[in-house]
Structures are given as C-alpha cells and as structure tokens.
Amino acid sequence: MKRSSLLALVSLIALAGGACRQDMHDQPKAKPQSKSGFFVDGRTGRLPVEGTVARGELRADDHLYRGKVDGVFATTFPFKIDAALMERGRERYAIYCTPCHGATGLGNGMVIQRGFKVPATSHHIERLRNAPVGYWFDVITNGFGVMFGYASQIPVNDRWAIIAYVRALQLSRNATAEDVPAAEREALLSGRKALPGEGAHAAPPAGGGGHNAPAGDAKPQAESAPKSPETKH
Amino acid sequence: MAQLFPKQANGLSKASIAAGAAVGGSVLLALFLLARSGYATGEGTPYDQKVPFSHNHHTTGVGIDCRYCHTSVETSATASIPPTQTCMNCHSQIWTNAPMLEPVRESYRTGKSLEWRKVNDLPDFAYFNHSAHVNKGVGCTTCHGQVGEMPLVYQAQSLQMQWCLNCHNNPEQFLRLKSEVYEPVWNPPANQLEVGAKLRAEYKANPRVSCSTCHR
Picture 1 (cartoon, chains in turn red, orange):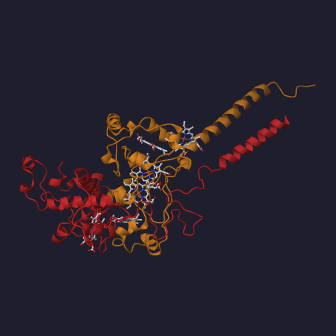
Picture 2 (cartoon, chains in turn blue, brown):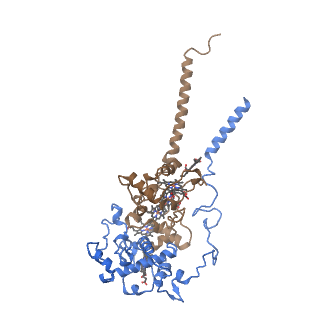
Picture 3 (tube, protein in one colour):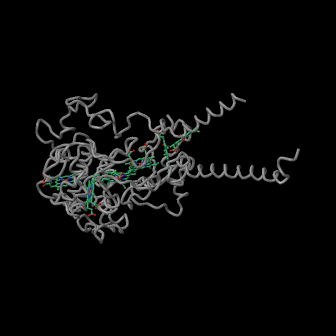
C-alpha cells in the first residue's frame, strides 16, 4: 500500500514536471540564423577568418568568377549557352532585375515607379549593348553607382544565365524579321503575339498601394518580355 | 447501531462517480482541444517585429518574388531571412527617412544583425526541408497562407504532425504547377484533385510517412 502510493506520487510529479519541460523542443543546438548566447555578436553562423579558402572555393578561374580574361573584361561566356540556360536566365532576370529594370529592361520597374530616387539604366542604350559580357558580370557582382551588388543573392552561374537572357532582350529590340531563320519566320509573321517593341509595357495597377490589385496584375511577368530568336526552342 | 448513511446515499455516490468522470473527461477534452488550438500552436497571431515589414506591400504590391529575399528556399532546408543588405538594395534610395526603417539603417551602419522573431517554429526534434517541397509543386501559400495579403506574417497552419501527415498521405489535395509555387496569393482550382493527381505523377511526388522522414 505504502509503496504503491509512493509510486503514484513519484509518477504524478514526473508527469507534472515532464509536461513543463521543453528540452527536446528547444535543444541547445545551433540552427541556421538562430541566436547564439555564446558568441558576443549573438550570431550562430560564424564568418570564416579573413582569407580563408574552403575546399573547391579557390575561384581561380578569372573568366567564370570575375568576368575577366587577361585582366580585361571578357567578351565571351565562360561556358556554352543553350536553351535551358536561357530559360533559367529569363526566370532569374524576372526575380532579381525586373523590380527595378522592368520586364523589358527599359528601366521602368515597379520599385522605380514607387519612388526609387535614381532611374534604373535602360538595358537598351548603345553603350550597354556594346559593353562586353564581362562588364555586365562585374555590374551584377559588384554593383554600379547606387545599384548594390547581387553577389550574395545570385550564384555565379545564374549571373551568366541572366546576362545571356539580357543579350537576347537587347537583340529583340534591334532585330528585323530577316534575322529570324526562314523556317520560323512564317510562324512568326502569322498571327503570333505582338512583335518585340509593339507590346506596351504592362501598366502599373491603379490605386497606389496595390492592396486590392489581383496578384497577377502587379507581379512582374517575364512572359510580357519579348521573345528573341534565341529563346525559341 | 443506526445506519451511518441513509439509503439515498447510494444514488448520491453513483451520481458523484458520474460527475467525477464527467469533470475529469471534460478537463481532458479541454486539454486535448487546447493543445490543438491556436493558443498552443501559435496559429493565427502576428508578432510585433522591430520593423513592421509588410509582405502585402512588397509581394502583391511591388511585385517582388519570394526568392529575391528568401534566396535559399529552392536549394536548402531553410528558406532564410534576408540580411540587412537586401533591404538596403532598395531602401538606400527609397523611403530613406522613414522612422519605421531606422532599425534597418542602424543595422546597416553598425553591422549588427537585425533580429526578427521566428514566426513558424517547429520543435527541434522534427526535421523539415523547404527545397524538398517547393521543387515538387508544394506552394508557399499551402503552408504559410495567403502571405501576399498579410501586413504582418503569422503562422497560418497548426504545423502539428497530423497536419504534415494529412498532406504526406494524400498530396494531390494540394499540389500545383511548379510555375505557380511562388504566387503570393493562390487559390486551388475547382478540379484540384484531378489536377493534383496528374501533377503528382508528373513530378513523382511521393512523400514518405515513415517516422525517420521527419524524426532523424
């Protein structure tokens, strides 16, 4: 009798105590971006000592990682461009560049329309059309003027993919029907979507904040960008 | 010796047993319901953050893609909260004097992290992986609600094991086209089950339900 009541008491205490403990919920392990009580700056993620090179991160390839060949901006891509890469470039361009430069690259993205103080340079000006791809790589990586660099947001290969897509965008505004392979010209001229340059850039949704605008209206859609011959596949 | 208890006491004792059982039962039921309520799971309550960051304005309004900020969501387990620099990409030139954004500017000046309170928080013994989901046609809003309409994000689902399993057992209820995964606001089509079943086959989405999938 005495032993069993003791047992009941012990298990009751254990139950009551167990219900309050969260040890397994909040384990003292470091999860990404969590707060640390150990390091002075409160960060769990530690920065490597300056100059540290991780395995496979030497980045010796100047062409791929800095867009330079023999110290000058490269005029060629460091790898082969195919349709899949172009598609990737289009998608990445829509995510990272359209907010400011707009889907067509004219520089009238939504953020600019909402009051960004400096206009985003049009991708279609003479100087940028002629600028080597290596220069473009440098702008995306390190920024230019008030535009911040995108090195931390966009991996190296994606930066090149974006440039490939921008090249197509640029070409699309300066191409004639003769530039299209004869086989595809027929399809192009008969009842397809607006020719590059004809389609007006999507107007911003009415009503300042866009709170009531349907999602499809405000979202930058890469589809509205003109297709160039290269993106056809 | 006279009877200590009158005869009615029999009924009384039976009634008290029943009452005891009823009280105990309702306490258990209450606890059971409480454990599933928003109060316990944290569902539905937005938190005060140092900066009142509005997903409504930035995604539906300005049209920024989730991946502009949550850069690792496609490639890793965590979606990641953007660093201060990401905010400054724009806010170095727009809304530059807004007092609301002072903590962002201060963090940028001093290099001290901007602290955000975690909204969706699984217990540490459960393993979750974003890339496994978003690359198989499970959209953000399925788990996080209509983020594009939220001035402040809140936890939209219970995040309890039962909720995970409901989808892992029958994912076709929720699957959508990969091109729609990042829509800030999304509603399923009327023939969701049909579409979902097709997508499930196409994407080979076969979530596992063995314990070690999520407890490892």
